[in-house]
Amino acid sequence: MDRLEIFGGQRLEGRVPIAGAKNAALPLMAAALLTDDPLQLTNVPALADIRSMAALLEALGLEIAHEEQAGRLRLVAREITCRHAPYDLVRKMRASILVLGPLLARTGEARVALPGGCAIGPRPIDLHLEGLAALGAEITLEHGDVIARAPRGLQGARVVLPKVSVGATENLMMAAVLAKGTTTIENAAREPEVVDLGKALIGMGAAIAGLGSDQITITGRDRLAGSEHAVIADRIEASSYAVAAAITGGDLLLEGAEPHSMDAVIAFLRAAGATVVEEGDGLRVSRDPASPIRPVNIVTQPYPGFPTDMQAQAMALMAIAEGACVITEAIFENRFMHVLELVRLGADITVTGASAVVRGVDRLVGAPVMATDLRASMSLVLAGLAAEGRTTINRVYHLDRGYARIEDKLGAVGARIRRLKS
Image (tube, rainbow, N blue to C red):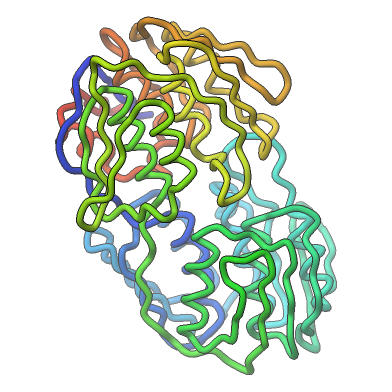
């Protein structure tokens, strides 16, 4: 497995291009199942998860033309030749469950293996299944597969999600656009990626109201058409590089970043002592290396609150703050696995239940560490950028699922970083 080697202590300065959002692109790819016309996506990031989803969709019968370097994908589901998403393809990422709703809506039947992905705590798909059942689907579990049937088609209904779920909201939206009648999703997720999916579906002919609110109303159509859609910028990638600027006392222009989707992270960075300003078509983040990093308490929340996908990266910054803070993880119960690795670098962090007390230290010192999940990987990269000496990060295949060409992007702005091949 590849490793990353970082020699810390370098101030980052320059421009970082922000890629399209992985968490927007994956459901958009699944939406191609809803029509026999071509769906063309642009600004698609060059990531392992995109390739995994493409392989899954090809197994279902889609024709896919992928220009990875140009960020273009053309998907055509002229005929669904298979309704089974097997474990060998699904186990690589949890987003695979997003084929369930559109496959069921288009063909009346779907069989999808229970998904895999990062081990950051239980993320059950019961909300997906309960919502589809409310639309008339018959759901059974057999040999590790979810089997959903709607031989007479799906029927519009009122669905109340007991807790906010991005994936369940997206799956239900895609199922409802071909259901008969009107569907209302209450307590719906408000994330920008959900809104982006909704806009793409509207471009395909769907009737959707309430995007960006906690109540989404969908009037079903007999069919959808093809469309072309540009994937939104990745707010988590942009936020991660924003922390890189702050943690190194650097100055980075994040080209293509969409500040309106990053309000909670921007507020956190400013409270920590960074300067954040909109500039051109992006965001400039800087920090005077002579000024201290201030401690900031954090509680992760659904959008528009502080994103759980930035908790680990924020902790890396707080590890060298001048003082102590408390970081509370309110979304996933097992998302502190990066703590022990940060401690190996010299951080002073104590975890009690769902909260971590971070007492800032004067310096971090490089050491060999191991990535445990996608965002934990980035927290170790950030800590390595600030640490004295060499940090070697093992199992960076996690990182490749969500950050394209990270060694190239960081190296171009002054980081001493290289990939070591197995």
